[in-house]
Amino acid sequence: MINTAENDLILKIDKVTVSFTSKKGLPHKAVNDVSLQLHRGDSIAVVGESGSGKTTLMRAVMGLVPRESGAIFLLGTDTGKLPAENFNRLRRMCGYIPQDPYGAIPPGLTVMESVIEPAIIAASPLTKSERAERAAGLLAELGLKDERILASRAVGLSGGQRQRVEIARALMLSPKLLLCDEPTSMQDVSTRGEIIEVLERRTKLGMSLIFVTHDLLLAGRAAAKIAVMKDGMVCEEGVAAEVLSHPQNPYTCSLLDAVPKLSWD
Image (cartoon, rainbow, N blue to C red; front, side, top):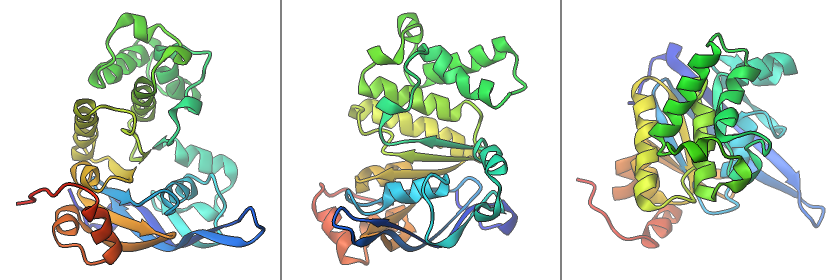
């Protein structure tokens, strides 16, 4: 769903640049003058090879890395002008699934406890039983129903199971915006499809989605639009089917040449 109503603007990234100092002491622009917009119910896949700036862009949106220049408006608010406490409240309206699931789940909690935890931190109005019911429902939707798994701690989970627990955690508070960084990288093909269906159900209800991946074909399944990044810049952006069937940038063409051809009729 692509909504163009201005009052439904969920995220505006306006000419954002993020720079780091390389190991050689030289300045490096990990994100360079990037602009993107996302309205309510929109979904966009940010695609590119490792080092293209995808993860840094997501971390900038969440305020986890400083910006050199540009502005980020989240739910209509300029995040650069917010005190830390107010920014934290704003971030609770967003879900963030980091690339590495091994460091994202509290090791001392069971699977159920870790999914419920965001509701406790945010002082959700849900009762204890309602929180448990919601957490169990999300985990079941993501294929984690075994009571032994729900009662186990994260240290005993596989990478794929950890990713699904992290998705459930991110959805626990019904976010207005979900940022996913390679959320299916450790899944088999069938589970990958099931996860995308879970996310699609949320976007149809109005959640906005940014889906980061290096896989162009997966991007076409996961989101309505695609933004291709190279060397920190967006080199192509458009409706997913059009980008995949009629790419305009040579870099996008090279990414497509590396994967099997599909029909987008």
